[in-house]
Amino acid sequence: MSSAFSIAARSVTGLVRSGNEDSALLHSHLVAVADGMGGHVGGEIASSLAIKVIGRLAPLVASVDVDSVEDLLLNSLDSVNEEIARVVEEDSDLAGMGTTLTTLALYSVKQKDYVAILHVGDSRCYRLRGATLTQLSHDHTVLQELLDQGKVSAEEAQDHPQKSFLTQALMGEDRNTPMLTVFEVKENDRFLLCSDGLCGVVSEKTIKEGLKITNKDEALSFLIDSAFSQGAPDNVTVIVADIGSGVDEVPATYLGAALHE
Image 1 (cartoon, rainbow, N blue to C red):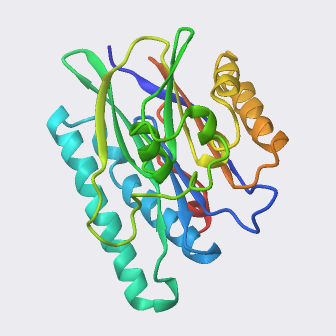
Image 2 (cartoon, helix red, strand yellow):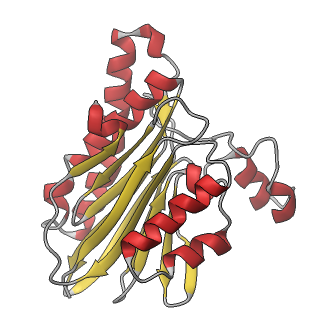
């Protein structure tokens, strides 16, 4: 089969933040979320740069082979870092800015559809398949390392002081070991990409409840409202992407900081 994403998405400023440092990319075969850091202006610029670089790949993803898709995604990180380094060199006040990046590319090989996930940081990608919700990305945080090592329990992790400390981010330097994973797509799979403004305050149980709402726009509203009911201490960016055939092509569209930069 040959499919495309059918998308509902929103990026909003949280209840505590003065501006939105999140950015997002929407396209029929490529979606991405970036959560900027390094101060209000720096975060906006870093996330926007990352999303705009990824956006250049949008016309290419559906028409190249599997090896080329993976190469395109991995090489894009070098381009993001080069752009961030260039901007910081021009304005030293922006030193220390960076961004997370979680990207999902949809493509076909021999009549089968696949998604490739490229991930750095603590934004997330989930898949709802039937009644099963699976987190497909793996957080690059100090807390996740402690969880992986068995040094803290899931219960202790809820309010851990190092919950948001990143171990990897795109900051203009080639020091990352990104996650790149490929999954075969099944009919009716639903994917969620989000900044930690959602997954950092909303439980996985609630995320699953929202994704099970059939209508994408209603699912999106439920998830955003859930974050705000928890105080929305961070900006909230959510992309709900269904796999479908006969879907109208969507050109590269930007949300959040990338919409204005």
